[in-house]
Amino acid sequence: MRADRLLQIMLLLQTRSRMTTRELAERLEVSERTIHRDLEALSAAGVPVYAQRGAAGGWRMMEGYRTDWNGFRKDELLALLAGEPQRHLTDLGFRDAYEAAVLKVLASLSSSQRRDAEYMRQRVYVDTAGWHQSGEEAPWLPVLQEAVWEGRKLRLQYASSGDTALSERVVNPLGLVLMGSLWYLVAVRDEQEPRTYRVSRIKDAAMLEEPVMRPNSFDLAVYWQRSVDRFRSELPFYSAHALVHPSVCARLEQTRYVRVAAWLEGKIVDAVSSGRQSQKHDARSSRTDAFVTWQEAELEFNTLESARDILLGFGDKVCVLEPFELRDDLLNAANNITTMYDFSNKNP
Image (tube, rainbow, N blue to C red):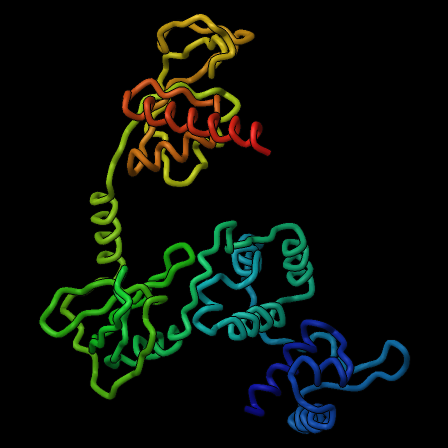
């Protein structure tokens, strides 16, 4: 690995302009004596490295010596350098390789291009993690990745959904897919159709010597898109028609497990929701609450229960018009909540 370390030293000196022996040793996780030997080897090979003494001293490379790699536009630099390595690179063990590649790119740039790159990195940052992380572990992912790369069969111990017992199976791995924060293995057993395995449910994996038998004309992207479409079409479906207060329209659109199928053109003027006026009136009639206009919407949920639980979180800012069973369910839930708090107040 010494050749790789020598290259890293060259790239670091080209990128950083100056580094001390200690800084190089800490970065490359070797001793300072090893760094001295490496720098002597570079110098003997004709690489113009030299030591500068004093408080601002350290190792430098002669100005103008760099790898000849040019032609980058500013937008291309931004695309490469805007953020940290994405989740899939880290999971697959490529984080160090990513950082080494970025270092090579920076080292190969001219001083003006390097300034442009640093300018952009300080002004644009891409965080691919998101707010909702699954927390699922995928300890066998490196084994799966190696088997996919090498075209070798896998022996898996797999726990199917809702099943505590493990089943053993030998599969031909065809590819890995990262969807959101979840990893999936696409594989096929002999003479069967490809299927998808959730990597977090794989409890043991071993790569075999046998080569993979890959179906003719298999396309991973096409297979995955068809699987997603099929999964979505088979999801339970529950629709509702509601009035939505303007203060929560954006929040409703961003809520998980509910989709705003349509905002209707007809707008309703609110007459104070959730019983703040005593008069009774039809839910579709004109309402005035400081003349705030409510928006009609067609909403899609998975089930009646999920619709009830989600809409309870919006309190009196969403009024369901149809179906009546959902209205009744929300009313019963609200009454139960009121009863619970009345009881707790009377029996502290």
